[in-house]
Length: 78
Image (tube, rainbow, N blue to C red; front, top):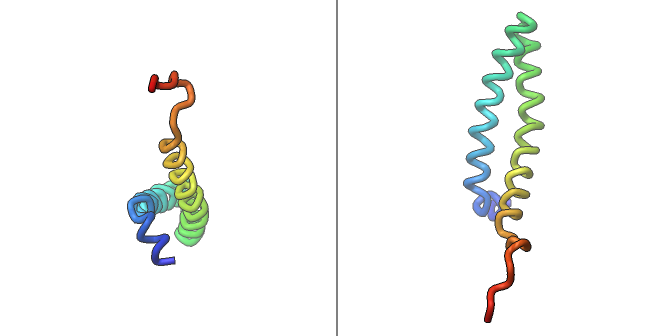
């Protein structure tokens, strides 16, 4: 598990910062809508947690897409 974390450290750091930002925004919005601190904290932790996991895998897919050669390019002469 530690090897996976080290290999993905930049993506994990980006995911963590995204998570903190998302929790902050979600809690402010939820509190503005509900006026209830307990409800706003519950909502603001649940949804961003799921989003953070999805974001990590989204980033991994985009990294893989970026490594594939563009098939639309004409082959280079030898």
